[in-house]
Image 1: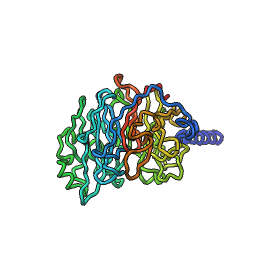
Image 2: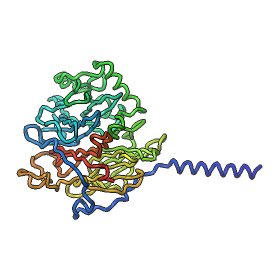
Image 3: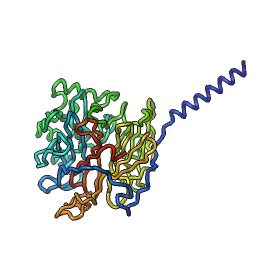
Image 4: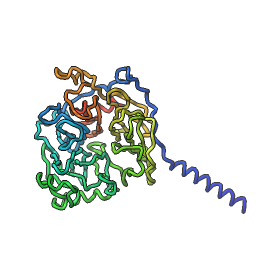
Amino acid sequence: GTRASELTMSLVVVLALVSAAAAAPRFPKWVGPVLDPLLPHGGVPLAANATYHNLYRATLAIGTYNMAPMIDFHDGQFLATWKNSPRDEDQAGQRILYSQSLDGASWTQTDGTNVLFPNMSTSANKAALFAEPTLHINGHVYAAASPNQFCLYPILDQVPGLGTKSLLLRRVYTPGISKFGQIFWATPVVPKGFEAATSAHGIVTVDKMDAETQADIATLADFSKLPCGPTSASLKCEACVGGCQSDANRANATNEQTHYVTPDGQQDVILYRIPSNEKLKLAASVRVQGGNWSAAELTDFPDDHANLNAGPLPGGRVYLLSNAMPDVFRDPLFVSSSVDGYNWQTLTALTSCEEKMYTAPDQPYGCMFRHRGGSKQSGCQYPQGIAVTAPAAEGFWAIYSLNKEDIWVVHVPFSSIL
């Protein structure tokens, strides 16, 4: 009896250890090539069969600072949004511009009238808006903006400044072009300081919207539901089931972050830009399904201290868009991929400011910005990617800022980045 009991206890201990090991979080690892700034594109190939589209070339009349773009695809329509200000980064008066396309090749014009969310700054309340990921709720599409930058949903009200109290939304009707609804705050109370701008622009609170819209926005309180579109259109989903990492556990990271689920479905991963550029690496938090988020830890992923974007690809792979080579510029823009989400090995240069297409009579070198401004930095940077699965627009698309001035989109076949 004693021997049997000992064996039983030993088996229980072994099973517990195996279970614990299986449930232990695994941080992603960089096993890709070492990039060399002295070699073209760092020494890796440039993506084949790429097509490039310029959505906006900065002008003094419309605004020379253009940055942090977002891209979405639904019902045959692309929507691009970005923050735009007269001169300086995140200066008071920064607004959100947009461009749309029904084929990815022809985009609506940026002429100064294409304002999706207006200047919300007043003399008493200086404010700058940020373009945020588009929401898909119950088959409806909502463009989003906020005076507080974030990159992932849900945004938790208990996190200062990142709650729905500071979320502006606008319905995007599809199919078609330039069909938008009323701008509204996602809560029934106007955020403090925005009363005058809200009134001046005719913006309302969510309780003044129709019942359908109110029901849609109410779902944002349910963290088990992802505000993402059908995978028959695209695989993009900037959200975490059950909520993303809280500020409390990411002292080593910033709110410039991106999320993906490992292809085996066992683990969530958030990659972050770190607060200091002393260590040009990314940080990561991981969560085993059903568990809690780990604290953010420094990884061996190379990074030029810039924003980034990750997500799923067809066939079970995942991608990471980033400036993966620390250099004088945030450039080139690279796309890496992984079969399992734990080991990242494939790396392709998606574009570089040194490409000839970025030159012009007033810009003999593509990495040279044309206009003065605060916090200017050269390079193809702050990307967002989207894997479109709809046959008419199939492929990998990325939107990015060139030199914090111009907005571009690139499209490549999936085969070019695998």
